[in-house]
Amino acid sequence: MILIQEFIMNNDQDGPLFPALFSMNMLLATPHGQAYTEKEIFGMLQSAGAGEIRRLPVELPNGAGIIAGIVGKK
Image (cartoon, rainbow, N blue to C red; front, side, top):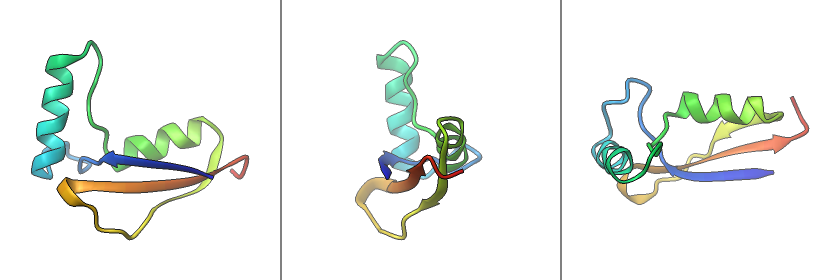
């Protein structure tokens, strides 16, 4: 199992506030950094061969979330 804890942007990339601000900071301070949307993270996990991908129903501060996937289960 792989777990990703991230400040997850909505699919329109305009919120929630803290993930959007974090993404802007990453774009300014790093060559290619950004916060990702749930859809983008799901796609990266699928491309890496993970299956049973889901967002866990936990409430974390500042718009953070956890996405889980099982490696080797497409």
